Length: 120
Image 1 (cartoon, one colour):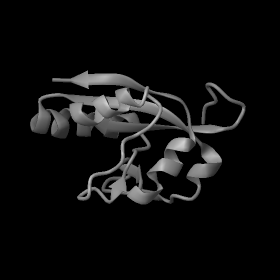
Image 2 (cartoon, helix red, strand yellow):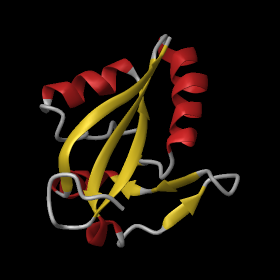
Image 3 (spheres, rainbow, N blue to C red):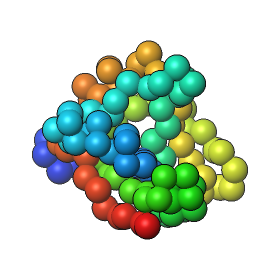
Image 4 (cartoon, rainbow, N blue to C red):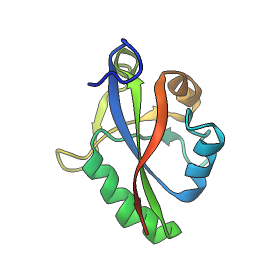
């Protein structure tokens, strides 16, 4: 847990993303994730940076030529509604946020979404 811009406890999350999604985040002034497309019923931030790096580097680069890893903080108490999902190995941990709850999720982001890695 960290507490960058508030006294409310926050949890650091990461999100691997491609250029199209990142542009929509930029348009939202780095404060919100865009609505999911119909074929994307779940928004899945990840709980560790190494996993996010692997997805950005190995999947996003292959599919769009560039992959980014973003980091952001969300109120810890709010996140308790989403059980941690183990999507493979013991360090492959995600939260599964239903697309219809993304606006509410965005309202609990503290501070801004930051790009911390870029792969080409």
